[in-house]
Length: 189
Image: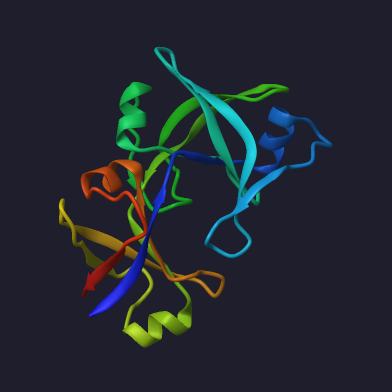
């Protein structure tokens, strides 16, 4: 049996450098709130507001470092509140995804695409992938035991030398599984 620590990823935003400067100003220095489990990734004190024609989500956390393209990651519940229907995608795959307005302290951006629901996935280093016989892009199932025992299917394996062994799900998925503290899942290949 292969065990993997489970992490819950709440709504957040990754900004491109250009969009970051529009929203926060050219010489703005980021304030790190805390390091995340993946090497070199940080939750920032900075937040933005997300706005659609019918609704708004306030204080959506910025995750650093900046990326090539701006990407907003929501849960289905968040999307419903915003009256959006974003695709479930692997991070970085934003083509033909939902649009949204992003409001920062210094400006706003009308993003033409970039809103997704992140597909559930396992981060792994090449060494751990080899140890467990996993391949990049492979799909597995992960069982969470407990009072609300559940098995997540179609979990994508993502391999990178900087990745730390973790299974990431969004807040809706964590609530469905009754996750309220640190827990490990069991992988079925």
